Length: 301
Image (cartoon, rainbow, N blue to C red; front, top):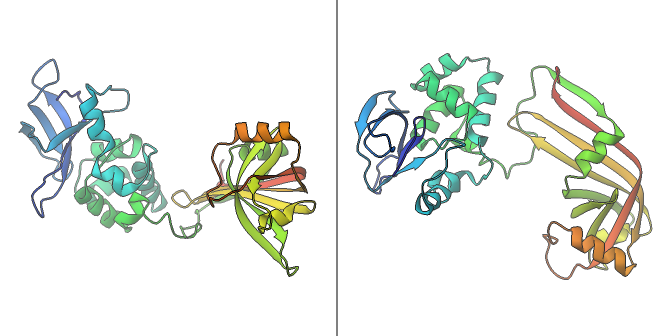
Protein backbone atom coordinates (compact mmCIF):
# COMPACT_ATOMS: atom_id res chain seq x y z
CA UNK A 1 0.00 0.00 0.00
CA UNK A 2 1.36 3.41 -1.03
CA UNK A 3 -0.18 6.84 -0.55
CA UNK A 4 0.37 10.55 -1.10
CA UNK A 5 -0.59 13.46 1.09
CA UNK A 6 -4.22 14.31 0.43
CA UNK A 7 -5.20 10.79 -0.58
CA UNK A 8 -8.17 9.20 1.15
CA UNK A 9 -7.94 6.19 3.44
CA UNK A 10 -11.14 4.12 3.31
CA UNK A 11 -11.90 1.35 5.78
CA UNK A 12 -14.55 -1.13 4.67
CA UNK A 13 -15.25 -3.16 7.81
CA UNK A 14 -16.72 -6.61 7.22
CA UNK A 15 -18.15 -6.80 10.74
CA UNK A 16 -21.93 -6.88 10.89
CA UNK A 17 -23.30 -3.44 11.67
CA UNK A 18 -19.87 -1.80 11.55
CA UNK A 19 -19.72 1.58 9.86
CA UNK A 20 -17.55 2.41 6.89
CA UNK A 21 -15.02 5.11 7.69
CA UNK A 22 -12.87 7.43 5.63
CA UNK A 23 -10.41 10.22 6.17
CA UNK A 24 -7.73 12.35 4.53
CA UNK A 25 -4.08 11.35 4.83
CA UNK A 26 -2.41 14.44 6.29
CA UNK A 27 0.91 12.94 7.35
CA UNK A 28 3.40 10.39 5.99
CA UNK A 29 6.03 8.62 8.08
CA UNK A 30 7.95 7.03 5.18
CA UNK A 31 9.21 8.68 2.00
CA UNK A 32 7.93 5.80 -0.14
CA UNK A 33 4.33 6.42 1.02
CA UNK A 34 3.97 3.18 2.96
CA UNK A 35 2.10 3.00 6.31
CA UNK A 36 1.57 4.22 8.94
CA UNK A 37 -0.30 7.43 8.14
CA UNK A 38 -1.66 10.39 10.04
CA UNK A 39 -5.35 10.47 9.08
CA UNK A 40 -7.87 13.26 9.64
CA UNK A 41 -11.18 11.39 9.93
CA UNK A 42 -14.11 12.98 8.11
CA UNK A 43 -16.60 11.97 10.80
CA UNK A 44 -14.77 13.49 13.78
CA UNK A 45 -12.09 15.79 12.31
CA UNK A 46 -9.64 14.07 14.68
CA UNK A 47 -6.14 13.18 13.47
CA UNK A 48 -4.85 9.75 14.50
CA UNK A 49 -1.92 7.51 13.61
CA UNK A 50 -3.22 4.59 11.55
CA UNK A 51 -1.69 1.27 10.59
CA UNK A 52 -4.13 0.13 7.87
CA UNK A 53 -5.36 -3.44 8.04
CA UNK A 54 -6.66 -5.73 5.27
CA UNK A 55 -10.05 -3.97 5.30
CA UNK A 56 -8.51 -0.65 4.21
CA UNK A 57 -7.62 0.78 0.81
CA UNK A 58 -6.41 4.06 -0.63
CA UNK A 59 -8.35 6.38 -2.90
CA UNK A 60 -5.83 8.49 -4.75
CA UNK A 61 -6.18 12.13 -5.63
CA UNK A 62 -6.78 12.85 -9.31
CA UNK A 63 -3.39 12.86 -11.00
CA UNK A 64 -1.80 10.44 -8.52
CA UNK A 65 -1.26 7.09 -10.27
CA UNK A 66 -2.38 3.87 -8.68
CA UNK A 67 0.68 1.91 -7.51
CA UNK A 68 -0.46 -1.47 -8.83
CA UNK A 69 -3.23 -3.32 -10.61
CA UNK A 70 -4.58 -4.81 -7.39
CA UNK A 71 -5.41 -1.39 -5.94
CA UNK A 72 -6.91 -0.35 -9.28
CA UNK A 73 -9.34 -3.25 -8.93
CA UNK A 74 -10.14 -2.13 -5.40
CA UNK A 75 -10.94 1.35 -6.71
CA UNK A 76 -13.28 0.12 -9.43
CA UNK A 77 -15.15 -2.20 -7.06
CA UNK A 78 -15.67 0.19 -4.15
CA UNK A 79 -19.15 -0.11 -2.62
CA UNK A 80 -19.82 3.63 -2.84
CA UNK A 81 -19.27 3.56 -6.59
CA UNK A 82 -21.79 0.73 -6.85
CA UNK A 83 -24.23 2.65 -4.67
CA UNK A 84 -24.10 5.79 -6.76
CA UNK A 85 -24.25 4.02 -10.09
CA UNK A 86 -22.32 6.96 -11.56
CA UNK A 87 -18.99 6.80 -13.31
CA UNK A 88 -18.39 10.52 -13.65
CA UNK A 89 -15.92 11.91 -11.06
CA UNK A 90 -17.14 14.57 -8.66
CA UNK A 91 -20.88 13.91 -8.98
CA UNK A 92 -21.45 13.69 -5.21
CA UNK A 93 -19.40 16.80 -4.52
CA UNK A 94 -21.23 18.70 -7.22
CA UNK A 95 -24.60 17.87 -5.68
CA UNK A 96 -23.37 18.81 -2.20
CA UNK A 97 -21.98 22.13 -3.44
CA UNK A 98 -25.12 22.96 -5.39
CA UNK A 99 -27.44 22.22 -2.46
CA UNK A 100 -25.25 24.28 -0.15
CA UNK A 101 -25.19 27.27 -2.53
CA UNK A 102 -28.92 26.96 -3.21
CA UNK A 103 -29.57 27.46 0.50
CA UNK A 104 -27.03 30.26 0.80
CA UNK A 105 -24.91 28.35 3.33
CA UNK A 106 -21.16 28.92 3.49
CA UNK A 107 -18.69 26.05 3.42
CA UNK A 108 -17.72 26.78 7.03
CA UNK A 109 -21.34 26.79 8.22
CA UNK A 110 -22.23 23.59 6.31
CA UNK A 111 -19.16 21.87 7.73
CA UNK A 112 -20.10 23.01 11.24
CA UNK A 113 -23.61 21.61 10.87
CA UNK A 114 -22.24 18.34 9.49
CA UNK A 115 -19.56 18.14 12.20
CA UNK A 116 -16.66 17.89 9.77
CA UNK A 117 -13.62 19.87 8.72
CA UNK A 118 -14.29 22.82 6.34
CA UNK A 119 -11.14 21.78 4.46
CA UNK A 120 -12.55 18.30 3.94
CA UNK A 121 -15.89 19.66 2.73
CA UNK A 122 -14.11 22.00 0.31
CA UNK A 123 -12.08 19.06 -0.96
CA UNK A 124 -15.21 16.93 -1.34
CA UNK A 125 -16.93 19.64 -3.39
CA UNK A 126 -13.98 20.22 -5.70
CA UNK A 127 -12.51 16.75 -6.25
CA UNK A 128 -13.58 13.18 -7.04
CA UNK A 129 -14.31 11.68 -3.63
CA UNK A 130 -16.00 8.65 -2.08
CA UNK A 131 -17.36 9.67 1.35
CA UNK A 132 -18.79 7.04 3.66
CA UNK A 133 -22.48 6.70 4.48
CA UNK A 134 -21.95 8.32 7.88
CA UNK A 135 -20.44 11.40 6.25
CA UNK A 136 -23.21 11.53 3.64
CA UNK A 137 -25.91 11.17 6.30
CA UNK A 138 -24.55 14.14 8.26
CA UNK A 139 -24.21 16.22 5.10
CA UNK A 140 -27.75 15.38 4.02
CA UNK A 141 -29.08 16.34 7.46
CA UNK A 142 -27.08 19.57 7.46
CA UNK A 143 -28.38 20.54 4.00
CA UNK A 144 -31.96 19.41 4.52
CA UNK A 145 -31.82 16.78 1.80
CA UNK A 146 -31.37 12.99 1.62
CA UNK A 147 -28.47 10.60 1.11
CA UNK A 148 -30.35 9.19 -1.89
CA UNK A 149 -30.44 12.62 -3.48
CA UNK A 150 -26.73 13.26 -2.87
CA UNK A 151 -25.91 9.87 -4.44
CA UNK A 152 -28.10 10.54 -7.45
CA UNK A 153 -30.42 7.68 -6.52
CA UNK A 154 -33.41 9.73 -7.65
CA UNK A 155 -32.26 9.40 -11.26
CA UNK A 156 -35.30 7.22 -12.07
CA UNK A 157 -37.67 10.03 -11.11
CA UNK A 158 -39.06 12.26 -13.88
CA UNK A 159 -36.67 15.17 -14.52
CA UNK A 160 -37.55 18.64 -13.36
CA UNK A 161 -38.53 17.87 -9.76
CA UNK A 162 -35.62 19.86 -8.37
CA UNK A 163 -35.99 23.38 -7.02
CA UNK A 164 -36.05 26.23 -9.53
CA UNK A 165 -33.03 28.53 -9.55
CA UNK A 166 -33.33 31.70 -7.53
CA UNK A 167 -32.36 33.80 -10.56
CA UNK A 168 -32.93 31.71 -13.68
CA UNK A 169 -31.82 32.87 -17.09
CA UNK A 170 -33.74 31.74 -20.18
CA UNK A 171 -32.35 32.28 -23.68
CA UNK A 172 -32.80 31.13 -27.22
CA UNK A 173 -30.02 29.04 -28.76
CA UNK A 174 -28.48 29.86 -32.11
CA UNK A 175 -28.72 27.28 -34.92
CA UNK A 176 -25.01 26.56 -34.50
CA UNK A 177 -25.44 25.94 -30.75
CA UNK A 178 -28.37 23.67 -31.56
CA UNK A 179 -26.27 21.68 -34.01
CA UNK A 180 -23.51 21.25 -31.44
CA UNK A 181 -25.91 20.03 -28.75
CA UNK A 182 -27.80 17.79 -31.17
CA UNK A 183 -24.56 16.17 -32.33
CA UNK A 184 -23.88 14.75 -28.87
CA UNK A 185 -26.19 11.84 -29.90
CA UNK A 186 -28.08 9.69 -27.39
CA UNK A 187 -31.84 9.39 -26.97
CA UNK A 188 -34.25 11.77 -28.65
CA UNK A 189 -38.01 11.88 -29.18
CA UNK A 190 -39.77 11.83 -32.53
CA UNK A 191 -43.36 13.07 -32.84
CA UNK A 192 -45.48 11.24 -35.42
CA UNK A 193 -49.12 10.55 -36.19
CA UNK A 194 -50.33 7.24 -34.81
CA UNK A 195 -52.50 4.70 -36.63
CA UNK A 196 -55.61 6.46 -35.33
CA UNK A 197 -54.37 9.85 -36.47
CA UNK A 198 -53.52 11.05 -32.99
CA UNK A 199 -50.07 12.44 -32.22
CA UNK A 200 -47.58 10.05 -30.64
CA UNK A 201 -44.12 10.78 -29.22
CA UNK A 202 -41.63 7.90 -29.04
CA UNK A 203 -38.01 7.81 -27.84
CA UNK A 204 -35.33 6.54 -30.23
CA UNK A 205 -31.57 6.10 -30.14
CA UNK A 206 -30.23 8.52 -32.71
CA UNK A 207 -27.06 9.63 -34.44
CA UNK A 208 -26.16 12.76 -36.36
CA UNK A 209 -24.25 12.09 -39.57
CA UNK A 210 -23.46 14.96 -41.97
CA UNK A 211 -26.02 17.19 -40.18
CA UNK A 212 -28.70 14.55 -40.74
CA UNK A 213 -30.53 12.93 -37.83
CA UNK A 214 -30.76 9.16 -38.30
CA UNK A 215 -32.23 6.37 -36.22
CA UNK A 216 -32.92 2.66 -36.60
CA UNK A 217 -36.28 1.04 -36.17
CA UNK A 218 -38.33 -1.83 -37.58
CA UNK A 219 -41.16 -1.75 -40.12
CA UNK A 220 -44.64 -1.49 -38.64
CA UNK A 221 -43.39 0.19 -35.44
CA UNK A 222 -44.72 3.55 -34.34
CA UNK A 223 -41.37 5.17 -35.09
CA UNK A 224 -41.48 3.79 -38.63
CA UNK A 225 -44.59 5.91 -39.26
CA UNK A 226 -42.28 8.92 -39.38
CA UNK A 227 -41.10 7.88 -42.85
CA UNK A 228 -42.14 10.14 -45.73
CA UNK A 229 -43.85 12.65 -43.42
CA UNK A 230 -42.86 15.91 -41.79
CA UNK A 231 -41.95 15.25 -38.18
CA UNK A 232 -40.67 17.00 -35.08
CA UNK A 233 -37.61 15.60 -33.34
CA UNK A 234 -36.64 16.78 -29.87
CA UNK A 235 -33.65 16.13 -27.63
CA UNK A 236 -32.94 17.66 -24.23
CA UNK A 237 -30.82 17.40 -21.13
CA UNK A 238 -32.03 18.28 -17.63
CA UNK A 239 -29.77 18.47 -14.58
CA UNK A 240 -31.93 18.41 -11.46
CA UNK A 241 -28.89 18.87 -9.25
CA UNK A 242 -28.15 22.24 -10.88
CA UNK A 243 -31.75 23.07 -11.93
CA UNK A 244 -30.66 23.83 -15.46
CA UNK A 245 -30.86 22.29 -18.88
CA UNK A 246 -31.51 22.76 -22.57
CA UNK A 247 -33.71 21.49 -25.37
CA UNK A 248 -33.36 21.41 -29.15
CA UNK A 249 -36.23 20.96 -31.61
CA UNK A 250 -35.69 19.90 -35.22
CA UNK A 251 -38.51 19.92 -37.76
CA UNK A 252 -38.13 18.34 -41.19
CA UNK A 253 -39.13 15.58 -43.54
CA UNK A 254 -38.26 12.00 -42.60
CA UNK A 255 -37.28 9.43 -45.22
CA UNK A 256 -36.40 5.74 -45.27
CA UNK A 257 -32.74 5.25 -46.18
CA UNK A 258 -32.46 2.77 -49.05
CA UNK A 259 -28.99 3.52 -50.44
CA UNK A 260 -26.65 0.66 -49.36
CA UNK A 261 -23.65 2.98 -49.06
CA UNK A 262 -25.58 5.34 -46.80
CA UNK A 263 -26.79 2.43 -44.65
CA UNK A 264 -23.20 1.24 -44.26
CA UNK A 265 -22.04 4.76 -43.38
CA UNK A 266 -24.75 5.19 -40.74
CA UNK A 267 -24.02 1.78 -39.26
CA UNK A 268 -20.34 2.63 -39.10
CA UNK A 269 -21.05 5.87 -37.19
CA UNK A 270 -23.53 4.27 -34.77
CA UNK A 271 -22.47 4.60 -31.14
CA UNK A 272 -24.94 2.00 -29.90
CA UNK A 273 -27.57 -0.44 -31.03
CA UNK A 274 -31.24 0.41 -30.37
CA UNK A 275 -32.00 -0.13 -26.69
CA UNK A 276 -35.37 -1.62 -27.58
CA UNK A 277 -33.58 -4.67 -29.01
CA UNK A 278 -34.82 -6.98 -31.72
CA UNK A 279 -34.29 -6.66 -35.46
CA UNK A 280 -34.21 -2.93 -36.13
CA UNK A 281 -32.36 -2.45 -39.38
CA UNK A 282 -34.64 0.11 -41.02
CA UNK A 283 -32.81 3.45 -41.08
CA UNK A 284 -34.86 6.64 -41.07
CA UNK A 285 -33.25 10.02 -41.73
CA UNK A 286 -34.47 13.51 -40.85
CA UNK A 287 -32.87 16.52 -42.51
CA UNK A 288 -33.96 19.51 -40.39
CA UNK A 289 -35.67 22.36 -42.22
CA UNK A 290 -35.71 24.35 -38.98
CA UNK A 291 -33.62 24.03 -35.83
CA UNK A 292 -34.44 25.90 -32.64
CA UNK A 293 -33.43 25.54 -29.02
CA UNK A 294 -33.59 26.99 -25.54
CA UNK A 295 -31.37 26.91 -22.49
CA UNK A 296 -32.20 27.67 -18.86
CA UNK A 297 -29.55 28.24 -16.22
CA UNK A 298 -28.22 30.90 -13.87
CA UNK A 299 -29.12 34.40 -15.10
CA UNK A 300 -25.49 35.47 -15.32
CA UNK A 301 -24.57 32.74 -17.83
